[in-house]
Image (tube, rainbow, N blue to C red):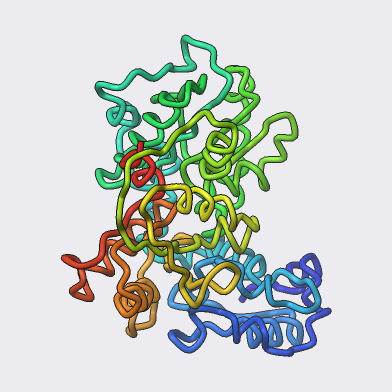
Length: 373
């Protein structure tokens, strides 16, 4: 049994008026047994609750749609994170989640890849390493962009963009470690605190004042959860939009493609960054830009956040990424553009599953920029 009264009081869940907007906005509601309104009601009625590792709590993508829609300004998704933490303390955690958390602790990334391989993506590129150089900007690469073969091209694209614009940037190389975003979202608060402490020591020792991040997940954690007031943190779309506005980057090649933008939850819903990615896409010559019907704060979640990259959900229906691809096919879209490694991977899986692999490409915005340079 889990003592939940302290958690619900801390998050002010007793102010919930049971309107149901959280459940109505939840992308997993109806697909699985996850019902955040019911969870809040049961926890506020009884100080004790019984949860197991098979509970739908693990279906949450932490997209924060529930929080965005709450008329009382509560944070239901934080309640789920807290309950996951209580489950971890009792040992009720899915094996894949446990393994990814152990990998972060031992190897500094949730895939358990060797630290020595973290900068292999830089082969043949001219990039400063802050272990022996100084730079105005720390390019925070992200575990996915450092290790996943598909997402490594995003890191290489961004490095090329920074070099093309004359930006003074560097990386941490094998010293870079996980930001801890998904560690926190899976409920392992203690490990997240340790990650923050270690990363901040490293940032300070390297004189870091400005960070540009590949992933919205890294961006969100570094900007909103680290309390690093002396460090400016930007997502790369914000930084690149500034380069275009300042005339430091010129896009000249015509792409002649129909493109729609998929809003990542951690960039849009959680940080209100909607315009910069669109400004970049519209600046690329030849692009016929279209908008999805479900966009901006109402955008579909790809189901990659909240640790779901290492968790299997309980629902057996169509994944939201597949729905997104089918929407794009109906619109006649050539390319779905996004700005998140997790969205990139889930959407690429979806085009294969739905049979649209030959018709629709999934591209990160950085890759389209490089094509237009």
